[in-house]
Amino acid sequence: MLQSIQSTERNTVSFGHRLATSEAFKVLFREGMLLVEDAAAYLDGEGRKDARRLTRGDALAYASESMRLTTRLMQLASWLLLQRAVNEGEMTQGQAAADKHKVLLSRQELASAPDAFARLPERLQELALQSQRLQARIIHMDRLIYGAEPEAVLPPVVLGQLDQLRAAFEHRVG
Image 1 (cartoon, rainbow, N blue to C red):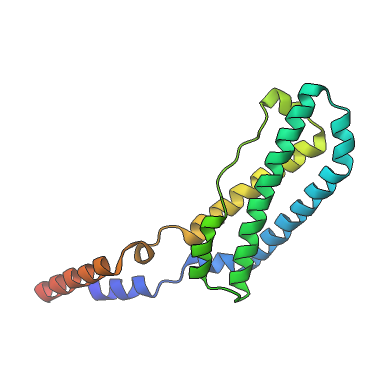
Image 2 (image 1 turned 135 degrees about the horizontal axis):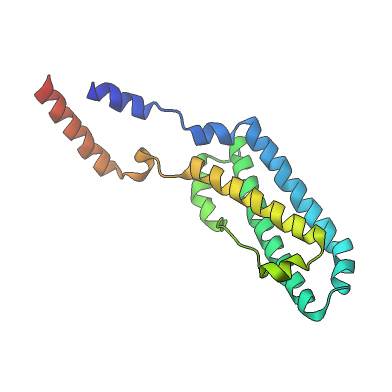
């Protein structure tokens, strides 16, 4: 029985890997890249006009929030492009995991206090909130794909010792 459990564990398909290569990832990728384009278009166009109409304090909040938005979206786009490279066979999951440390994928809160955020242009607020929702989805997917899987975490020497223990218990039971 222990051997069948061990065999099953080693032949288990990673849900995260399946999800990363699914239609759900493709949709997430398209949404992410569209959000990057929308934010860039707003910040380079209408956003500049909106910023000029703000008070000095609100203009500072606008600058902070737009920088945070840009940083967040660059991180998310980097992660999406890295995962797409894996999906298209340009790199392995292991290579992506090794390169993933270059992408700072952490939860970033809004840069402004709630009252200052509420005074910012509506479109900037929408983009910031959309980027946070996208960030949460990507962090969730990242944990599913790269999260701690028993065999990925344990060093080979420990796996060997576990195999010896399993064999000893099988011999004793059998």
